[in-house]
Image (cartoon, rainbow, N blue to C red; front, side):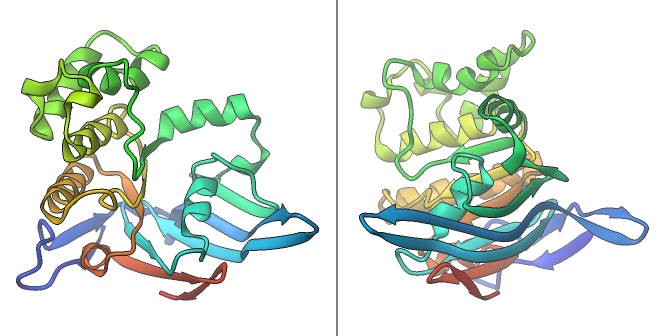
Length: 252
């Protein structure tokens, strides 16, 4: 086990330590996430725009990494590639030793459902489903065993919304919708949690509540957390901060 202090006295981060669940093989720490020479380019008319220009990154199991950088630096693009939501121009992304750049869309969907939870800035709840049904959805799509309803209600209770489980997204505030999204992200106990500016659309009080719940749930569930954020106060809670600029990692 590896321990790292993540907050200073007076910090709003919950707790002072996170556990890095780094797997050891022959005395070597194995990374849960490995990114090798990753590039992403898109065509913009007659010219090519290079969004990522060769990213190398390793993240051990259990670590909380904050990805920072100015707008246009490639943060959200990198997160989408880690989730297999997009394909790189070149390079590799390995999750638990498996190169996801070689998987078909169907294979990636199965892996994503099994290993990855994703929290979006704009919630992405299904408007025709209640809060409880939104949390249940990943489990139902995976064909999980009976007991999933209890899991959904437990998670909604953990984020303080058990009494709102029958409400539709339109009946919930922005902070409540993001709390439902947190519960949904943890529904299948993912080993990797990816969060793209999860507090970006919220006021400061709601944002702090969501951040505290995210860190508390993540510590309970034991996931590796990679979060894109512009907010230094959020990044201070992380074990490690990675700064992107112009498609490159310029500092850690």
